[in-house]
Image 1 (cartoon, helix red, strand yellow):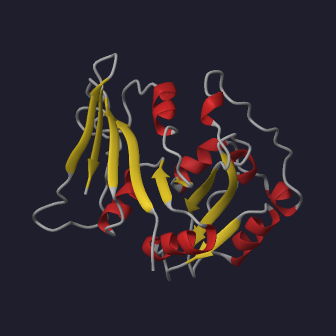
Image 2 (cartoon, helix red, strand yellow; image 1 turned 90 degrees about the horizontal axis):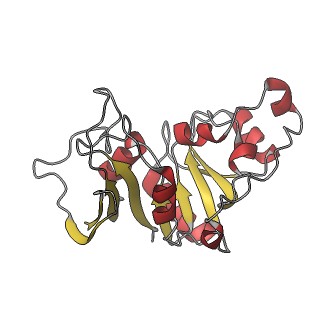
Length: 230
């Protein structure tokens, strides 16, 4: 079966960290949305940052009314139809703020990737919120199988990540990453415990994962734009 092309995208410090430095979110998202990706894959922790979780009462009822988030000035040309799908691996059912997530102007719909151990109550919650789900894997989401379903069932041909090191590491370890694009900031992270670009769930082979540089540019503040393919 076919699967989408997967592009890992992030902004890192010179020591490979995602936190502990001024990241410049406006530039990050302007560059990120230059790709016309069919889906944007985010981790459950990233998804939870879209807004507060619903209360127990809201989850049992219709949920909170959430107004659409307006497009940031200067970003209007980046909102093109069809908008991307928001895809979140969430086998533990942690994301309870889907209405806030889908109020963002970048997404047309949401899809949760779940596993056989995902609580039935969470699947019911997704249905009430109009969020589709893809079930693969026993204890954890089988990312390779889930990507194939996204390709075949939802017509997803390209996926861009907006995620932390854990999801990126899982994609790398599963051999699912086709391209890595990063903004390399001209600084060191100010936190020794800051999250890394890639947090592998297990070691790779001794030779690591060779990459080929396909694009580079210096940005106005000394940062570098780097794109690598497998």
